[in-house]
Length: 144
Length: 279
Image (cartoon, rainbow over all chains, first blue to last red; front, side, top):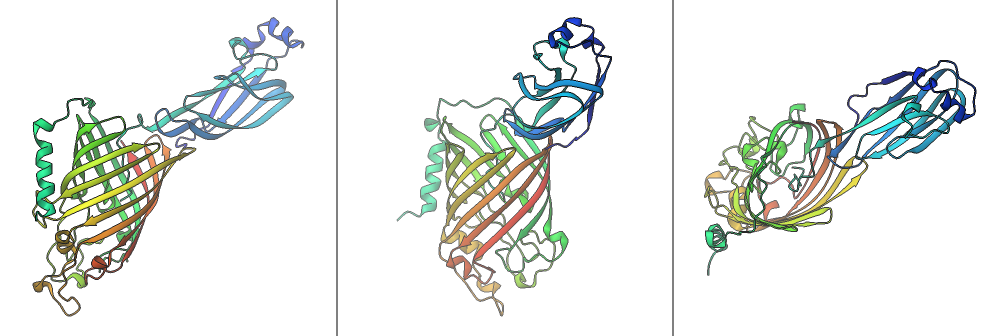
């Protein structure tokens, strides 16, 4: 399923995120110090048998921060909030993927939504690929 | 009384006549091909005597297969894939295409050939039990397939005769039903099929002629025979280009075939586990 099980480490500085004082006000918190969050998504590829078919994978997501952080893990495609952590330096989550398209997972400050791009702290995409293009009408039906 | 051979061959001739050519075809102009290199382990209890697997080489099967499709013509390497025999390739042409069914002309092997040195995965070895027999060549039959697409399933009936090679001039009626279920990234299929072989065909493959008679090999002339098969296969995409396959086929042969001195058993169980690179 996951041939290239490379680890991806997406390190995004919070400079862009924290530049917006508005964002912090929305959260009702004081300005946060500069922070780096490292998120590891493994695997980052999901292979289906045929194009267009839903691909299933159990994806492990871990993140860690230099300072205690309040963040949520969001499935960007659907804006679904998968999990939140309050004032944690690290987190772990197992995501049950079932999608025919690439899935982007984002860490965002609590209370923000994926529509607010600048608020994305870090994100990673799980690519969906396939072995056979299209669902050929003719195929091999016998083993031998 | 007409022999089935003449009836079937006459029917095929009519189908090839332009008058009968269907005009509402919707063939894809796109040239589709699929090249696969497969490395597998095959356990075959073998129908024919002397085909027992002993060495590791007998279990390992490296095969290169190509499937092509263009404007109604297709080549598929379905049957006897593990044998690596070119003659095992299925060639066809779609006479009529419909949403739910197809009518194809096909050229296909229904029984595997063998000789005194080659049986199943055993190749280039002197097989004492088959010493002195004539070669049973891979003799593809030509015929018509009616194939029906159902929900997650396919069923077909082949009616074919040995028109081209003339090795046995026998006919076969072959039917199969296959259902596929998706479970996460797996494809799991199971199937059931039955084949009815004419006397000419069973005689060519399983009969013993007078010049082939040996101490433990009496003269034998089988009547028509049949084979019933059950199959289960699972496919899993290991990566973008790699496919894992595991499956098993159980075949039960009629008494007329089993009673042949060339046949080792009535029930044959084959198991395959393979990894394929798909181009």
